Image (cartoon, rainbow, N blue to C red; front, side, top):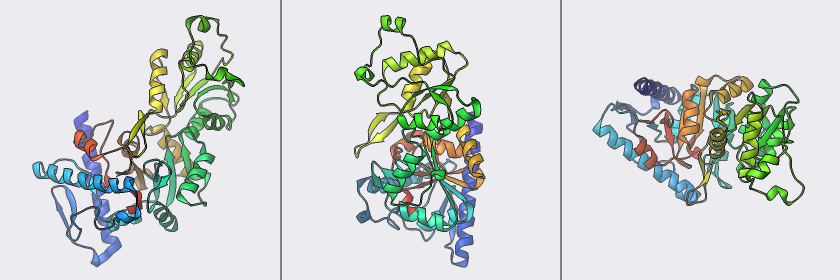
Length: 396
């Protein structure tokens, strides 16, 4: 099975490389630089040795984006060395110039889907050139979507944040695909209006679920009892579970998650074995700060509830096919004409690869050159991308 998957990944990446070469030749015509296809790598005889030296200026960015460029140089060195040892080894294509990336997008792509944090911005700092890249894509008639596993925002909040960070006020709610939105959409397809939903997560997640006609059963105390984190055996035995009965539980990132919430949610599921258990995502962690600290992700809460309830959650975030089908239906997309851009292998790149899209890894977020070295040819859970760039400001 794994051998079949590796062969399939190789075939997909070779096809995408051919598409990339053909696009550049069409775009540049007779002026196109001569290509040497060697050792399974696409190389341009006119490309500079360094990935970053041809189009990256350290004067325009802070450490995040400088580090992204340096990480990409490490990735190039890693795969160059691998190719010397084994000419048949599977490696992604590292775009060596903006011209190569632009040619592929111009000729082969109708829709570009972006992850957000670590791709378009880090903390509150926009990626240099991201705004210009988005505006150029828009002027070319490309469809642009923003797909995030962050359930802490609804579509309105995501549009507001991206518009502010990127300084593009023309962004619309229709372009926003948050996992809070995908959760609400999935529930609306499975349950009747008025169904009772218990939500672990933010007020924005509750609002998104409520907006499609469901009743939120969470009890939001007006007093200090909301700060109580514990629930002992005696209290659990006497608890009346006024939140129930429920038709579904939705689990989103909750920085105030407690043993009390876990106990209540577990028993609500036990009271209705047919209730849906929906996860906005299974992310294990996210990156915070300039020194790359890890904050636990929603998957930690999901796994806790799965383990104590004996239930398996339905993932409606990346990399699920469910999310891909939802986006394709909402926006009438042809996956073979889509490019997904992200910084994580387990969510973004896997989402693109498994759903028939071209995938582009940017080195401005979670994934490092060392991580790629450890993975070798990649795994099912963490596949290699088709393409690599330092950051989205270099896309087009």
